[in-house]
Image (cartoon, rainbow, N blue to C red; front, side, top):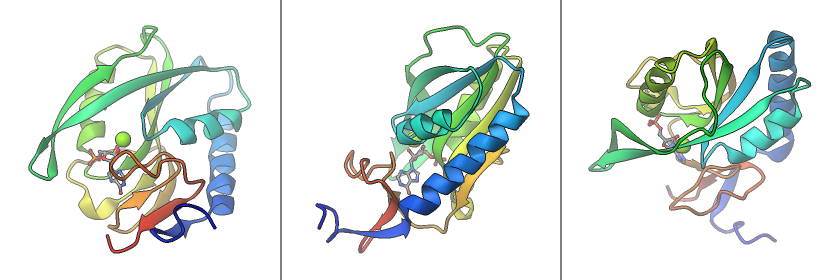
Length: 177
Ligand code: IMP
Ligand code: MG
């Protein structure tokens, strides 16, 4: 028994999750060979994905993080995003791989990618563990995608529900939500 057993049901189990992360790591290894790779994780949701994914990439790379917070208008994100933590090194000239937990409406990524392009990286690509296309409000090109999911609220492996349940080793669904 684990603390979450009564409130969460498994959607993507740990074995499937880890196998997919290894596949993405292998693909990124092939496609970035010889490049100056900077992996840019978006706090806090991508932390678990970033640590596993970078260990699955067989290339020299740098890891950076950015923190963003969406201004809420009612219960929906407004697409107006504030940068709360910025990178420690300039991104100009770098091959930047943005790593996100989930693309939901896409509004956060739309803002962030526009902001990052203005910093003149050599290239910019997006890896997301999850995509929820049913709620898309902005068209976002995803280069590396873990799983496409239905319109359900998910937790675990970095994703939270009220700042809790990030530390589940799988992607789950809160029962009754
Ligand atoms: P956006 O709607 O694409 O701008 O997504 C903004 C952020 O909402 C994501 O980066 C997640 O942090 C959060 N989010 C969206 N869907 C879920 C979910 O199902 N569970 C937990 N967090 C979510
Ligand atoms: Mg997030």
